[in-house]
Amino acid sequence: YGAGGGYGAQQGYSEERSSARRVADHYSARSNQTLEERENSPIIHLKKLNNWIKSVLIQLYARPGDCVLDLACGKGGDLIKWDKAKVGYYVGVDIAEGSIKDCMTRYNGDTDQQRRKKFSFPARLICTDCYEARLDEYLYEDAPFDICSCQFALHYSWSTEARARQALANVSALLRPGGIFIGTMPDANVIIKRLRESEGLEFGNSVYWINFSEEYAEKKFPASRPFGIKYKFHLEDAVDCPEWVVPFHLFKLLAEEYDLELVLMKNFHEFVHEYLQKPEFTELMRRLGALGDGRHDQSTLSQDEWEVSYLYLAFVLRKRGQPPSQ
Ligand code: SAM
Image (cartoon, rainbow, N blue to C red; front, top):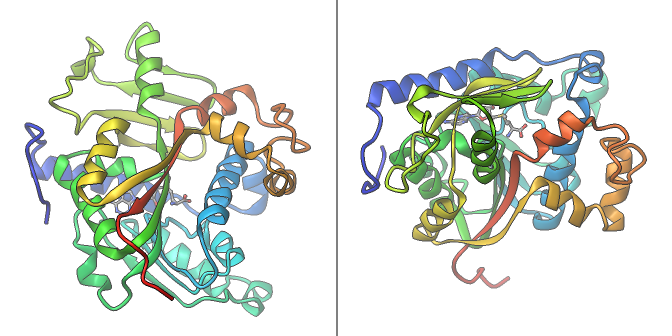
């Protein structure tokens, strides 16, 4: 458990444990929505945009036959994306028991119609804390993986340095040389900028709010204490729990210590502008319907949802070393 040290004081272990439990309980309690509930969600177009971004990342970096490790896989919302990429094997890990159960149901097919069309790859699902457990002990028979994905979840590891390190140690230990790590997480630069622009310690719009505690009244974040910078995040119909700021330049440096080199980092707005120009991804956007008829004119995504997407970034890292020859 836990490794490293050197960036200053850490939160107490039990406080840390209960924060992780709060996050797990929050996600565990979120029940599966019906199709109608989903379509009526105030952030339906944001969810579609997020799915588009994850699909683009998967299409860009996954190869047929790949072994996939999906850290914080949730309810398995990306299973279909991996199936489309024709991957060969899938391991999903999540801390929330309820989400792992839903993921299993989704994989096995929860209706007669779905049961007839099974996923084309075998899968294994594990319920554990990805940022505390040594995953190589669970997965020594499944490793090495060609690609690891951690979507909208890596920031839950930045509550302490030990957890942030364990997250990266797990990815590094399980990826093959030349293997790829893709992910999405909040963009700390945008969050801190918004905080500094706001009057108090809270900001947001009709679909989200972020609240920092009085501890950050001066809105200063010393470089000597980059872990455990907690805020409360509420997103309508999606999230309501503590999260932690991930200063990206430090994430990059820490990842390098684990032989993970940065390939790409883009705020979601930049990501959309760049990849929406590519015909295959324009077509995918049209099918998903996040941005109306596929043009980036926000004709269906509301301004408030578009503002939320600015709070996130996508990243790609590569494990150092040469891939084994075929
Ligand atoms: N990756 C999924 C997706 O994109 O649909 C789920 C994203 S959801 C916003 C965040 C997920 O992170 C939840 O399923 C939650 O249970 C999981 N999570 C949070 N902390 C975790 C931890 N310490 N270990 C494993 N999973 C964790």
